[in-house]
Structure formats: C-alpha cells, structure tokens
Length: 414
Ligand code: CAO
Image 1 (cartoon, rainbow, N blue to C red):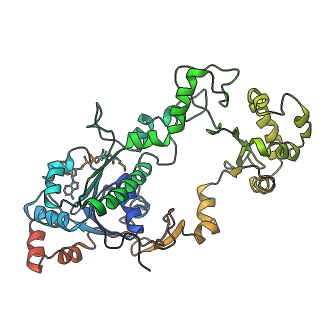
Image 2 (cartoon, rainbow, N blue to C red):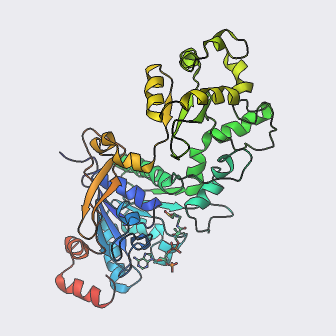
Image 3 (cartoon, rainbow, N blue to C red):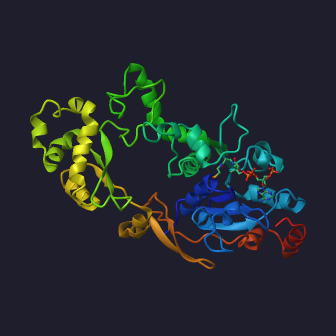
C-alpha cells in the first residue's frame, strides 16, 4: 500500500525536539526525510540524557524514526554545492535553528526560493517578529511565555510547567499542518512558500480557553474556578488547580491505595446530565431533592464539598473500579495513568500508538508511534538512523560520483 506523502522529499535541518517532531510525522506519512547533521557531532540529542554509554539516546531515537541521516556542513565549499543540490531536489525544507543560523550558512529564504521556487521552507522559532525575535527558546521558556505556566498549578502556589511538551512537540505538530496546507496550495499555484510557527504562538493557541477566561473576567468572577465564591480574583486569569476548563465541573479525587500509589487517582466530571446517576452511585440521592445541590448553579459555590463527598466514595474503590462503575452510568471520568501503565497497555500496543522498535546498537526500545491514523496510509515505525548512515547513498542519488564524495570527505564537508 502506498503512503500519503510518497514522492515528497524533505530536507530536514532540524535538531532537538520541535523540528524533529514535525519531520518524524511527515516521515510516518511516507515522505523521504533526509536529516542533515553536522559531521562528527550530529543532532545534540544523540548524546543527551544517555541511558546506554556510546549509544544514541532515547531522546534522539524517539524523535527521529523513519528518517535517513546524512552528515553535511553547508558552511564548506563542497558542502554548499551538495546543499544547493538538495534544495533543488527537495519539496520541503524544515529548520529550527536559532534565528539567522540558516542565513549565516549562506542560504537566506530569497536564495532558497531562487534555487527552487517550489520549495516550501518551514521554520520554528521561539518568538514571532517583535521584541524577543532573536531569542533562543526551549520548551519551558515557551510554556512560560505562551500563557501555560501562569494558568497551571495549585491556586495558592507557584506557576507550573506541564510534562506534556506543548512548546516543542506542540509547535512541531502546528508546523506539520502548515506544511501540508502549503503542499496543497502548491498544487494550484506551482509555488512554494514560507511556513513559520513561533513556539509562543503555538502554546498560546493551545491555551486559547484561558484567553477566553481572561475576557470573561471583565464580567464577573469565574464561577467554575476553585477561587469562587470565597477567594478573590485579580486582573489576570488565575491558576485553577485541577478544575475543568470546560462547561462541566471536574476534579481529581483519591482512589483506594492513594496512600502508597502516587497515581491512585481519577478525574471525575460532574456533567449536568449524568449528575443524578452520579449522586445515586455515591450514595447521596437526597441531593436531587435538595435545593443546595439539585442544579448546576446551586452546586457551583459548593463544588469543593461535592468533590470531597465524591472522594469519600472513590477512596473505597480502585481507580479501575471507579472507572468501570461510572462509565456504565455515562459519567465522564479518567484514571490517572502512569507512564508504566501506558507502556504496558495492550490496546495502545495493538493500535501502534506504543511501538517496540529494534535498534542495531541499543536493542529493543519503546516509542510512541503515529497518533494520527490514516486508513490508506498506516504508519510503519522504523528505527532512527545512525549518524551519517545514509550519507553516501543520498549523495549518489543526487548525482555525486565516488570522486566527488571522496573530495567532500577530504574537505570535512560530510
Ligand atoms: N554543519 C555545520 N554547522 C551547523 C550544522 C551543520 N550541519 N547544523 C547546525 N550548524 C550550526 C548552525 O549554523 C549554528 O551556527 P552559528 O550560530 O554559527 O550560525 C550552530 O550550529 C547551532 O545553532 P543554534 O544556535 O540553533 O544551537 P544552540 O544549541 O545554541 O541553540 C536552540 C539551540 C534550540 C535554543 C536554538 O536552535 C533555537 O532557539 N531554535 C529555535 C527554537 C526551537 O526550535 N527551540 C526548540 C528547541 S527543542 O525542540
């Protein structure tokens, strides 16, 4: 079976996480992703957080599946020639170096366009045009500057960053959308274009509901936040603990075993239509006749009490028992799953969301496969490449002779 992006060649100048997330998804969709790495060093993540000495880290292997790796220094004479050839032959170039790095290599956008007018050139930067445009940015900087940290955490405590890599991987996924749209537009226009995504913008996009709440604040307190009715609201959206960001109240409650198991918790949503069943299940059918509890408005100022009563019930059951009982009643809920549980979950293995891959140096390891499932283009996860594993193969494909390759190697260009 063919793949959605068969025939699309990606010149992958990405490193660390945001860019590699993007090109890995394009590779899973079937694009030929040629990852260009600095000779002798490669993507710095190959050596970061290593668990096995001398072997590419999980950080690298889990972000660079299904790609080919070539070593190339576009700052050398021979490197520039090869790089120019690659620009001519590729459809998309993706980069996430510090602002200006590709220009300093001698390849500003204008030149890339000149070499290949059909080229789609995608860049990740920390910030868009403005006072911070020249700054280098990593994940947590983006979370802090994009509105996530100020709105995450317990209500009376410090801002928190989240474990979900919304700044890096979140931005990479936005870039995928931009590239696919640009490829479609190229079908009609015949021209490539620039795709740029700032990490701050991507995080803010993911925090859209918090900007919603900022504007609601002008019209009174945010009644679904735990600060209501006893706390105070300032000028900006506060942290809301584990309160639900939607129209139905929710909270994390303890389950049986919480004293020793840090993940013995479940998120319960007291959805309007399921509330009667929930009240009966936890042994409080009288709430349905009580004016203090029998409407969502009546419950709002008592939500913490409602959830503490729900918790008295959930603490008598494991999170799986709570899940099973409440699901049967159509009460939305979700157990707090640890990474160990997710790694071992058979249904995630069956769908290819968690995949075991074999690597010639590290042996078997787990990775997260493509979460975007296409019925006619299933992703087949292949191990990440060794540094420069495909240099000669790719250089021959683009027309270099053995003598050219030898000369490039002599110059340190590959
Ligand atoms: N051959 C020769 N040189 C190469 C090369 C190659 N194949 N690939 C990269 N280089 C050079 C670059 O040209 C650059 O050199 P100059 O600064 O002299 O122009 C240098 O390597 C490294 O670039 P960098 O400044 O991007 O690297 P850094 O480690 O200092 O910064 C990061 C890393 C991530 C903070 C920065 O790249 C950045 O802000 N990127 C944009 C935002 C981003 O994607 N952040 C997410 C990071 S996690 O996903």
